[in-house]
Figure 1 (cartoon, rainbow, N blue to C red):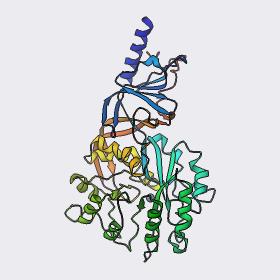
Figure 2: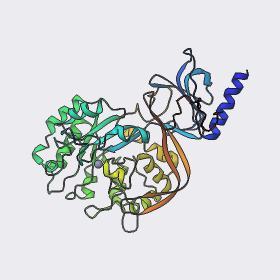
Figure 3: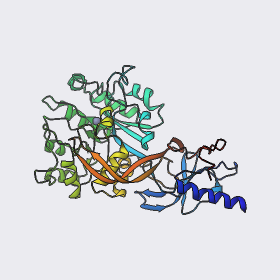
Figure 4: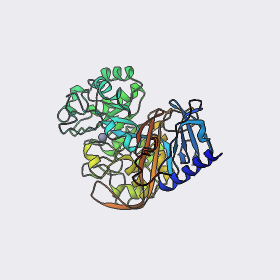
Length: 424
Ligand SMILES: [Zn+2]
């Protein structure tokens, strides 16, 4: 009895000081890992409240108001935190190309494990950095060994994003070998990408659409297609296809809102037909002048892809939690924001096994801390807004395995030196 009282006292104090208490339990425990005391937000089920979440191996096996601490081998006290499905970033660049040193020589891709786990991201979709000629290299070099789950839109260009002039080589936009590659890797290739083509013509556009239709997968349009108007692009897209950089405001491209801030008719008609709008932040793809009027009028992006690459991290994008916080600052609710980085993208790429927390689901889980204060958020135009909330990833779990634990919540307390006195 005294032992029980001491344990519960330790939990209360740990919660009050922001430290987590962990315990190793005898192997008779029912669960491998128990996440206790957090507010769970699961947009798919509508779960929104304080729940305990229990895991066995790679699965969530129980979600309940109270699950006893002694039923699990490892326990994380997460009072004050948010537990959400593992975040999915729909728009990233994580393949460095064919040369072995591409990560080091100024190319823009990011090694996913150098950025994603520490930002709560369990799944990324690479937006066409590879094409059919180098997809299998991408799979071997990055996908197979990464802690982050890596999926891909296959570029219509056989060599993917190798820079100009290779990306505008219309002789390297062959449907048949790309379709064959998609059919050989259905577990990883979730769609087709077209973009970064600034010459006249339609071959790239028509080839990419043909490939997507024949594969039965969505088309992902990165809007660097200045010869094709926004209206023509939207008219060529169907239910489930994407436009990214939805709130871009650059000279070469017509924005989605008019001079009064109203979302233009062609965009509203496309949304009504089921075309999806990805935020696609990137280095230049996100402008408050577009996003704030659109969001205020009820036009929310379907997904919150970051367009992760080196310069977007160092620029105004920073990380997916920062983009989520920016969305809160622009007036989206927490649930709307989380949904667009979990269940929204999971559905959009046909991976309904991801992006939700339910008994039996894959244990991809993100633990967020929601700090209250006065925070600044930037756009690509160099402007800033203020927000009251800042989300940070505290712990990231992929398929039951903890791949990020910022505060050592699952470590034993170091007790010998007692630098600041014994932890109670
Ligand atoms: Zn991109």
